[in-house]
Amino acid sequence: MPASRIAAVAEPAAGQAGGRDEQAGAVGDAQGEDGDGVDGPAAQVPLRALGVREILLHTGAGIAALQGAPLRPWLAASIAGDVSDIAWTAAARSELPDGAVGATAVVAGGSALVSAAVAVVVDA
Image (cartoon, rainbow, N blue to C red; front, top):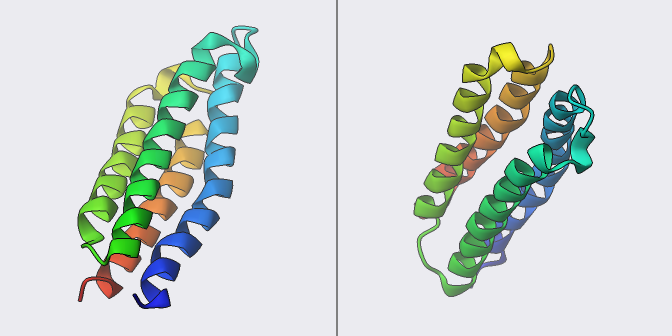
């Protein structure tokens, strides 16, 4: 199996991890207004869900890359998750601190763009 298929999944996934930390911070800041902060259950539930989704999608993509299976379905699912993050954050705009929607749009939008770029070059 070509190393380029593995790199096509591994490198973007590693880069996205740091961005997700920033997005989690924005969610934590929003929850901090209630006094719970990022450690409270109001923040932990969505952060865990986001983490599980990302782990499952990128693990699936990694396994697909190792087996030579198509990667685009995994990347499409990741893009759909990123777009839903942006949409739901925007929908809750009035309940979030200033900058939360922009931060989510930058991080999740960047992740979607990276996934789209990888989708263009794999499975061709």
